[in-house]
Image (cartoon, rainbow, N blue to C red; front, side):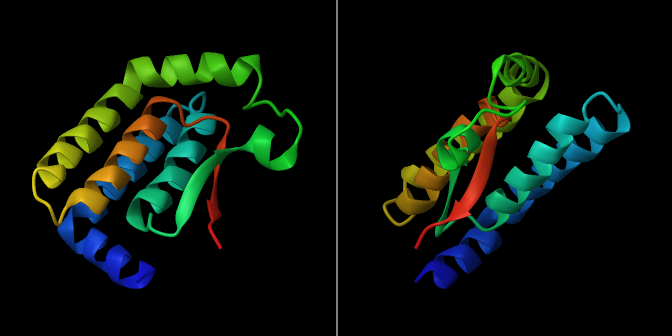
Length: 132
């Protein structure tokens, strides 16, 4: 079932939003200072391409310890990210979610977009895991 949902996801627009994440990642890497944000963009771009059966969790919760992205520097990074790029990616996911939730069949896809919109606002300190 996950495979079918993921293939439909890619065909119905998931590829375009993943490309948006990857473009944001490339722009971040060009600035050198934005490399931590660029890395997060590529991780979340892969998640945006194939979301069913996977979820984003905090690295602090997963590993039981703090790192540079889960502490105060990560919080500052998320605020900067939200101001400069996160809001635009979140709006793209939000618009797609509304368009899909209006249709009954699109509800599971719309819910995935809502999860991605939340991640777009604060991606630093998150990692993607596969659900069993």
